[in-house]
Length: 379
Image (cartoon, rainbow, N blue to C red):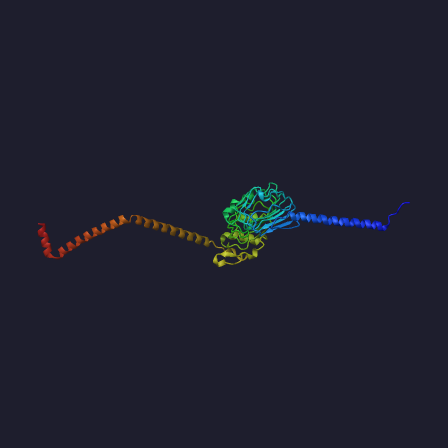
């Protein structure tokens, strides 16, 4: 006789199986948490795929990072150098790296070789003196690079532009160079960034933009606010006009409203690229100060200011030349003071003898007795 399995027995087995699965899931989760926490560095906080080591006075990057880290924040420390030893192990899941405010001075070659999938790198608020153009791997996919407030002199800025020119940043789309001493962006600074669409040069002390600087990248957003631009030359305007989708920010510059700005005024009145055109005002001359550029009429643009500037420069140069001649003259007098003194004494003695002779002859001519005595003595 075959025994039939009752419903109660079947339910009891299912319950035991469900309980076993529940215990196993919790055990696996517990092990994963323990293993993950075991890989979290000291002085850091780890959560999911994010590691934060902020304001811990670290002098090197932590090495025992979880291999599945995707977002790494190491900020507010005193790490002076980023090199190949900073990431000794392959971290192919790391996409976002934030190293802001660490007083970094050197970024060595091969520094990011073990971060093949790095997409976003923030190096803002550092003191970079040397940034190797071989810091990134040849096939890197970096898309966002933030170097804001990282170069504190134009010399260090220019000497480290090689990372943009030769760093194989072919996938870079966003570049932040704000709050640096750029002054005059080099002509070839962006020519090897074919996918750059967002460029920030905010507050970078820029006084001029050379021809060809903005020619290559397909820019869509260009921030030139709070610089020292007085005018945009016609060649630069032509380059900007070739990018119809470009949005430009120009407020906060000391525009010089004279005859040299005519082409720029015409461009501003006929273009929709400048997003803050209503905020552009004249800085000089005094008669047009704070007047909106869109309200300036062509008849108000004069060139006399340029001539006045030339004359002022000429007067200053002439004054400096005359002052130099005066200093040289005084120096010659000082070096020959003894000879000049002796020469003056000789002149004084000669003049005194000559005047005594005149005085003696005058007395003779005035007194007849002395005149007869003089004649007798001559005989």
